[in-house]
Length: 581
Image 1 (cartoon, rainbow, N blue to C red):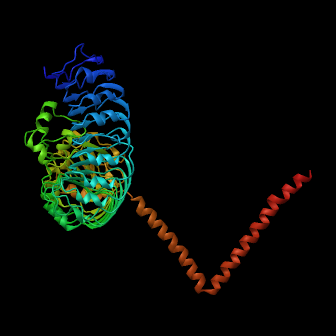
Image 2 (image 1 turned 60 degrees about the horizontal axis):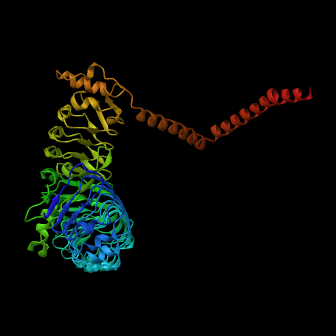
Image 3 (image 1 turned 60 degrees about the vertical axis):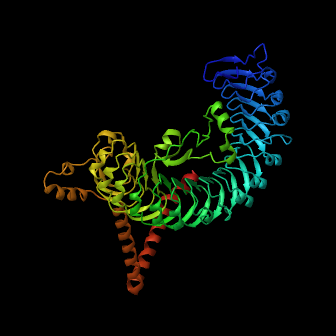
């Protein structure tokens, strides 16, 4: 027997080894079970000829047995999703000299990513994410890695410059404590498809020489990068560009329209200014765009409505021409991987196709992460927290596939387009904190997928939409801050004049009702203005007319003197008399 595949069962307890050595077994897969305890030290002796070993997604604990180093024919080793601890044994790194694929993700391992002394000269795929590794050793450069994932560890210090000399195609280093600039040596990664350096403390500017022609995904979010929009990204075949939560400044360049394959553009929480370039409308594949929390000005480009926002293309998980290593799980079978690694394509490094895996997007009043099937069905526009002006383009109603639309916290004016009733797929619509006026279109009640609706703090007037379908679930917070609005769920009731119009007379009644109550802001301003006017008039009269000025000061003197003697006669003397007694 050459293959023993026992994955996705309900095996529990410790791993029991066969009484006889299985010298002909080449492939052993017992992943996705409930096995627990230590990985037996005698595993290598029981299966001396293994080429593929998958023990992932169990409950194994303790150290990785150094005896695995005796498996000198091992090509693929997957120990991910367990509770293993300690460091990677030196004997494993020296003995398994044919190892091509090593996956250790989601354990409690520590120390260097690989031992300083190793003989892994054929290692091309290393997944060490979600552990406690603290160091990338210089010896790592001896391995011909094309996929390296060290995300979510405890890596500190600067990004090693020697990594720029490796044949990397996919590099994940997110969620660590790395600092300093992006090494200039990264300009030599000419085969790079995906670069993820997000959630670190990286500073400086993006090297202008960075120009990996096949790159598809760049993720640099949540660092301290600065400078203008990186020119190094011009004309790249990018699917995803995430520069969010940094300190980039200047304008969004017009050449961004040349990124014709771009699907996800995340630039939120930077210092970009100026207008939104109309060249964005050339990005026909765009599905998610977030420009929120910048200093953008001007109007919303009408041409954005021409984009289809159909959703992110679903990646191919595996076929003979296009292998996709999904993150964070390794989904293809060991048999498929064996075939691919031994094919000529693996030598050409042309079979990895990174795709958009996970996106953090502000929606429904919070920042949510979307991945998997949900992500591939998702689409949205977020232009909130800028200084955009002018009316909302009615053409935005043509975005029938959009799921999220957020224009809040700007200076938009005019009315809510009736065409928004055509946003049949929208789930979140936020127009709050603007200067919108007029009535809320009653046709919006036809948006049956709407889960979040916020029009608060505008200048809207008239009756709130009927509480039918989804609108029956929206509370007063969706409308607060519009003093001219009335009707449920607001506490202010509408009188009969607000009933749906049936004759032309109704329009007159609506106008009368809108003006039938007092705007308190106007009242307070009018009162303050009148008060200031009276005081200034009195001061002017006293300044111009000396007779009235003399009479005014004489009156003040009489009032002060009378007040003084009144206090002395009625308060001071009775108190003294009481104390004497």
